[in-house]
Amino acid sequence: MNGKEHDPGLENGGPLTCHDCRDGLQEYLDGTLAKKRSLQYFLHLRECSACQESHATMQGLFEMLDTLPACEVPADFDDAILASVPYASYQEMEPLRRERVPVYLEEHFLPQLVRSRTTRWSGLGVSLVSIVAAVALEGPAWLPISAGIGLVPELLVRAQGLGRRMVSTGSAGRAES
Ligand SMILES: [Zn+2]
Image (cartoon, rainbow, N blue to C red; front, side, top):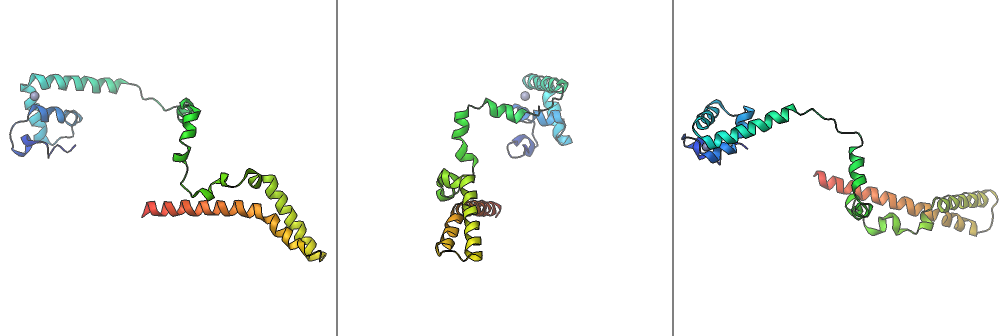
């Protein structure tokens, strides 16, 4: 609070009102007021028992706060808070946590069978064998086709990942500008 706009007492050079006084008590106690201003508080407090009371209360509170031991935040503070959140609510917050991407870029848009590591790796294996067979052995014409099909699961997963990265860097760029 800069205390200038809402403070007719200061602008008019007149005495502080009780309202102004209580508004700026914290700054007065912190010693952050200008000298002249601080003197106004001092004079008002000397005369006004109601503000004296507020002053004493706040001063007592500050002194009490000063006596509190500094306490370290426990290392597992975040975990403890997360652990206290019911799992159902945590799951409900999932859409808020993740970056917004079009549905076809969501991982679960692809069937689990396509996404599974086994499918992708066997697909790559089939492709590799087909390519080697097609090149080295001049095998049947369907070999390049099976090579292409074998690549499909891996390519789909990678294209999705690339798409998600492009979307998220795009939105990060928009946020910066
Ligand atoms: Zn007062």
